[in-house]
Image (tube, rainbow, N blue to C red; front, top):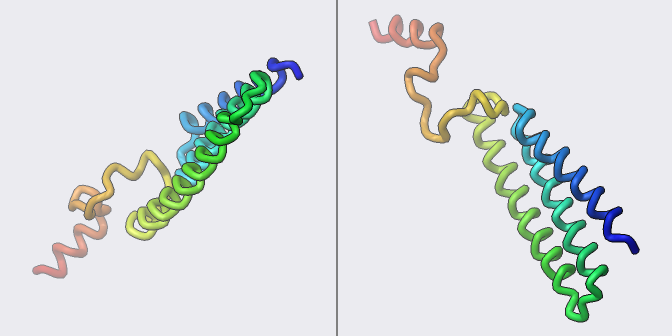
Length: 120
């Protein structure tokens, strides 16, 4: 097996993942792009394991570890995305600046005026 084929495919997958992380504004698409990058790394690990004819199959073992880490990352990432969406009503990366409570600067102008009128 030529090592060039899986290596080129992994480079293409990783490049698409980097583009997705840098260009997308939706958090779910950013998480999918990170998964694509991890899959490119997994492809490289398995390809080099086969190419080197490793008797311990360390590349495959590391791939299983990477898949486990990726599953945990997606679980936690989606939980954080759902929590942010519930509080901020948006899943855009640019609009989410902090994970803390809402500050008065984050409240829209109409809501601030209503709050002032209710206090008077």
